[in-house]
Length: 240
Image (tube, rainbow, N blue to C red):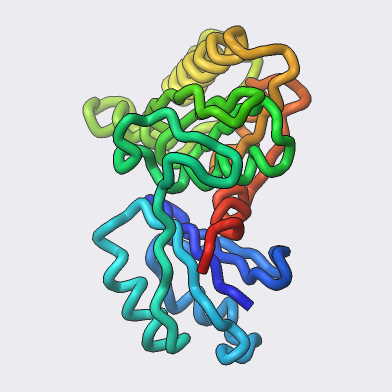
């Protein structure tokens, strides 16, 4: 068995891989390794023979390594972006600038369809990456995620304070602060997705992942698929 960990900015996802399948998955709050221990405590740790990590938070890598060595007796293998791997070719001239989570999500999406596909990751940032029919990464886009946009607005204004908002596909003008913010963000996301999908080939497959995947999916064509553990599925393809 292999323990897989997707260490994101806000949430961390984990899975147990056995025989090239994810047999158990879960989500923990960022950096709460005690919570992860509780999630896998029913598994004899000796059955976990390797530990693979996708990390976008470099400053947490030391603590992840220490946890692996202490709790599992294993040093983690941190995934790295490669120019060519698994049938996908990265478009970045400097692959060190491409987020490993984006790369792994692309690997997983490509393996699912091996045809033109779009990966939308609605997490702390909202990222999109497009792969053509040959497996060539065409490039991507990055904008603030829903929560980040909301925080940016609230932190820079004294009168706009909202704890939570709901994103709506059919937005309309608001008549109070909360609906003004919710509908404003909805309009922004809808316009972003409309511009994006207008440039895609009609047969492009779409995969959506990240904490706000369900909110964002409503702005995409009906054939878009939610793939909650897409990064872990890509990590599963890497070598231990």
